[in-house]
Length: 236
Image 1 (cartoon, rainbow, N blue to C red):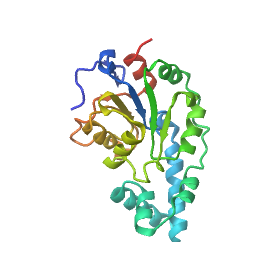
Image 2 (cartoon, one colour):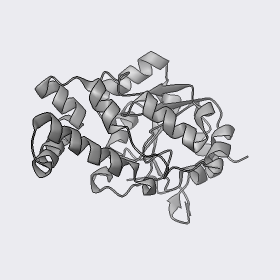
Image 3 (tube, rainbow, N blue to C red):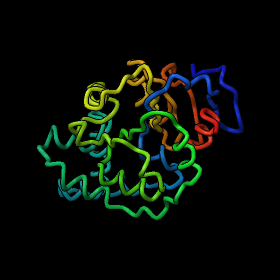
Image 4 (cartoon, helix red, strand yellow):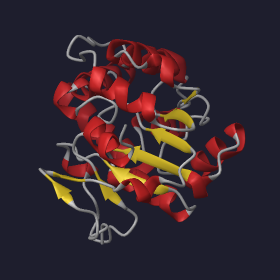
């Protein structure tokens, strides 16, 4: 089960400073992690994925939605399913689905301050594109913190939680998992990270499919507010 020794503060389970003293590399998912799920950016992305699928196959929206979900559940992402089964070129798809309104994302000075205090390297590990990630972190006002954005292209279009994608991240950027922590809003994405020795932090979201499975030993900590969790874990 999730770490029962970590004290509860409000609605969040926080790490004590000693729990992250060994961390040298801080790895963050982007969407619904660096910004709150309440921004609902993924709702925009999901709608645009549906539009793209409907246009690609020339089918109605309801049929497109069903096919989209089938790709997601069988292959980890709609993109991967369409590339594997229908030889779709990814660039046009990725540009279309990430052309969204970012106005719901506000600057986050508390997150900026918390990231400033973190010792060591800071990376983004996202199934989106670098261009999308750069736009988001600029909106948040935290773009100056990150050494690397490891995106879907760097992952060779293989999404989390495929283990090979984590291996590519470690190899390309000389990351030691034993001294790294990974934050993600989709619980299953934390499992491969824990299996290779990373500390894991789950950022709960509102999507049912992002919730933990019955066996949640791979989730070490839960943080419903990222900046608050970091503030307690690494105080000034």
